[in-house]
Image (tube, rainbow, N blue to C red; front, side, top):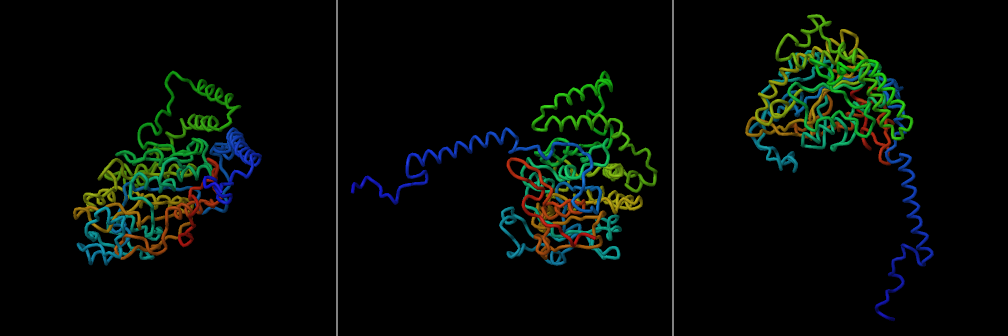
Length: 481
């Protein structure tokens, strides 16, 4: 046998053993290419079929909702769990010592964590439930029985940008709809003259990674968050130019509507819906942020009589007015810009947290009290969180580094079983070790309280159904009343 000829059993026959069979298999490939082109033309791989009505009309929930609306209090920068909601006697006892090797993982070790740093602040039990809260939150502590404190939150990123994105969208990279967009898509709004989803930023600036934190991702633009200012014009460019009449605005919208007959991808329909909403908001939005109609007692409750608490208190009072008017989701940021302008306490955790707790404590307690007095707390879900927590070790003896392994947040209001501390971190407050609540679990629980099954709320994009919780997430039923 000629050694240059391969044995038959070593020849690749994946394309067939004859010319006819080879051509037949290649034809299947050409057919697949043609099919892909046809499906793409029909919008299969980026289909707007489930967004053919990109409006904020109210939609039915999957099951009876505990809450009708949600206010997210976002502490941008990463608040320290061991200084606020997670007391650690062992950390206090061993402050100044090295982190035990059994606790120190490679992620933290690579960041040169320093030695253990005990908290300066005393924790006391509050309310009938005895939930332990730091002295940094004296006003909030009086509402302890409303709070379901989660001490075992877990995220996947040490970085602010990706951490913010994951807490807001469920993913550590850009391009995905935010939690608020999913809620607006799933439930719509109860006020057709206001956005379904409103975002209010800190007066010092916005968070890293910017608008994608409240963006619509691959959904129609109708579902993106609308930034609302707490002073001046509530929405930039909402007021039309002086030389444009109401009749001209109507004519522009009608022209767009006539062009939408061949709107195959749904983008124009979404844009028209947003223009129509903007048109209606010209009268509704200014009224919603007009605090002159609030009583002096209410304004004081939110801390509007104190320069330190006034900016955040103003945003929270507007948030209450918005949910009162049927806005589905409001997100309010504390902290903006960089370093001590937000909760990112690398330099001096005590100075940083005294500043930001002092700005937010009284307004948050005021919001809870005000909602309760108006009968709105039972139907409004309040979520307090940051993108991650901070290490139990010290940077340069004073600051704390980022820590996504185990941190704290809390829920209150609509359907929440208050007066509890759920989950546990290790003895030093670094990693969640009991009843771990991943961000997907937090999102699943939030959606459940709003009447949405996170497994059923999907949006078809790029050939597959996407969810806020990706392919995981569980409802933490211990947090639900």
